[in-house]
Image 1 (cartoon, one colour):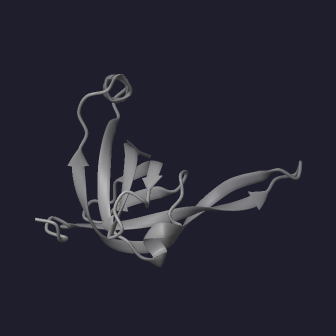
Image 2: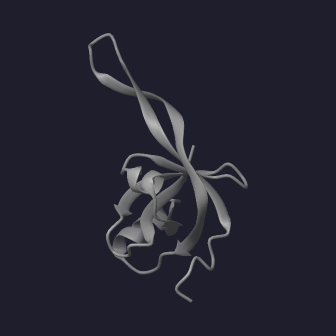
Length: 112
């Protein structure tokens, strides 16, 4: 199956909003939703980094979403929210070039 197939999960992607502190440094203060879509959560198995994250109580997953302007705007440092239960995940990697029709993300979490 080469189509969307398993894009069952409703997802939202949030960009950190920044403000300046008293020292003039940029500080992330809140999150603003930038993109909402459906995606497939793919369990990651294998590497030492993934095993280390699991020992620390965090999961590493791959996410597949349809490409588009909003999907291609997602950057490392953003967060993903699973709209069904509100859990949030940190976006660790973004791959917008492997397949033209999809963007793949590596996320880690859940985070508070």
